[in-house]
Image (cartoon, rainbow, N blue to C red; front, side, top):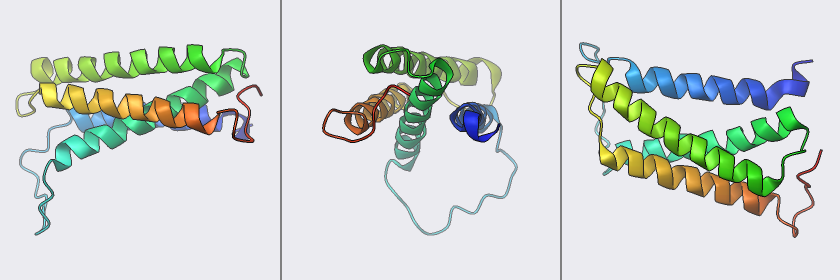
Length: 135
């Protein structure tokens, strides 16, 4: 039974993880940053999180609709949802948290990550590949 809904579980878990990490306050916690200083690490993290968001989201929709939605419909829906969700999280950071900052750079990184995820899904289910979108 769980195997039948693996992408549903993964997508919902991923959305919850993003929500908690985005809205949870880390002030007062001893977080050792270490000696590795990666420029724009925050933006890279946003990019990767929303790339995975859109990939898992597309596979979730495919699983839920049994492939009845076209690949194009699913990807347009998911990229729109991912961008809207990223904006919502930034607005919530601005309004609900005291030590988290909403940044347009984060929205941009989220958007680029979501588009990259959609591109990878479209490539993966392209005509040149063996895997078909329809279940």
